[in-house]
Amino acid sequence: MSKFLIASLMVAFLCPTFAQAQQKPIRALLVLGGCCHDYKNQKDVIAKGLAERANIEVTIAYDTDTGTKHVNPVYANADWAKNFDIVIHDECTADVKDKDVVETVLKPHRDGLPGVVIHCGMHSYRSEGFPKATPWFEFTGVASTGHGAQQPIAIDFTDKTSPIVKGMANWTTINEELYNNSAGKLQDTAKALATGKQVTKDKAGVEKASEFVVIWTNVYAGKAKVFSTTLGHNTKTVEDPRYLDLVTRGVLWATGHITDDGKPAAGYEPKK
Image (cartoon, rainbow, N blue to C red):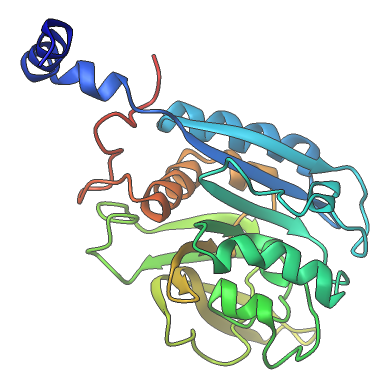
């Protein structure tokens, strides 16, 4: 054994932070754009918020098209996900239905690449089988087909043990869209972490309470860990520190870099 190797091992043993410092950042690709949302500003809020909370390096793939039919240019490359540790899907492209395009998007995840799905990402890629079942629903872990009016959503964390939400207190959002779970439940591969309850009024003023799962995890194709939340329509919600904490923990969980109490694993703390 060389003197250099012995010295290196001694430094790592005597100073744990030396080993931690060698950890590379989690390389996240944030895909967003399309209809109905303030992606121009939200992209920067998310990237900055994640980097402030963990050792996450975000690359942004922002499509300026504001329709539902345009394919994000990042998917033009068959190896679009190469060199990334996780992909955050925040696009809103319901009418991108081409089988080959959907296959291009899903293949890296089916091969094991972790994912995060935010808000309208749930309503994208409505290909053959919609509204009952689509390849995209297998990835997200729940079939969701619509939402009602924007009203506050009362979030109730139903799983107190998951490191993603452990220690988080229930809160009520500003006006937000409550997405439905059209099949009535999550897929067998998915696990609910929180529900959201929303009270709306019809034209006659009669109140109606709706409740659906709003935060959950899924295991796609038996390999890829996927964190999902339907919250995040409005920029003020995305800017909420509680929301950014949640998404950060989802990234850490999906990539396997989270402690039991929801903190970044050693070496994945935010850079100072």
